[in-house]
Image 1 (tube, rainbow, N blue to C red):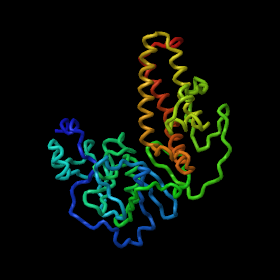
Image 2 (image 1 turned 30 degrees about the vertical axis):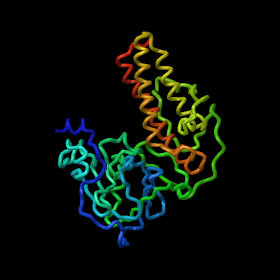
Image 3 (image 1 turned 90 degrees about the vertical axis):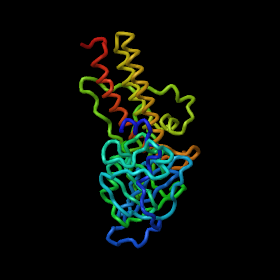
Length: 341
């Protein structure tokens, strides 16, 4: 059953289970909700949770895939479900007869561990068993979130909380976003300080708060190695990594760590094998940031959009330094390295 479900790709997953039709308007809002609200931007592919103090936290989401209607307008949270059961709609089962009538809670459930049902029939904000889809157009109309992010939103959400879905980017309505974790949470500052002068590559002072991972005590930190593709790259996110000194430094540190590791491998075959593994890791990393830090082409010049993208990239690159170090530690267990046992 589960093998068949996996091979079927859970076609159409991302729509909540079928529900009785209900009004899409939010209805009266309980004053006990404390002023919290949710806004979802289809253009940004992000959910913005506004707290009672006016601060806003931002999370990446997956939205409906091309051709799937996505509800727009005002609604509210109608029900909270922990460990939800997913029931494909009749249309989903007609499109993919291999789908079961219901998927119980567990690792194969497309709704993840938490679901917030909205006023639109069969539409919810929920988790996912496919985190790589976050930031893309992949759902059946619902709004998917990373497991850690939906847990955060679920914990503070209340029945009756207003939810607004808009097509356009929130753009200038979003203050600049400081660095946060790769899991997706980006805290949005209510007031922003004037930008500081850009640091030099040789002695970087990150424009965003970046916690440098600790290097192994037995080795000195590697020197950053510039990306040779920076001379020709045009993709907005890659261009930012090349042009923003703090991001270039983090990217260069990861590259330098890899180069030093490969240079220490005596056996050519082992070196080639390790290089292939690291290249594949880097490719997966760039696919991940393309989804998590996505911006519309041509909007990178907008200060708010650029700040959000740079914050997301800083967090991702900071995490990548840790990932590269861990990957190298695992490769050393099966690779002959000059000067090492």
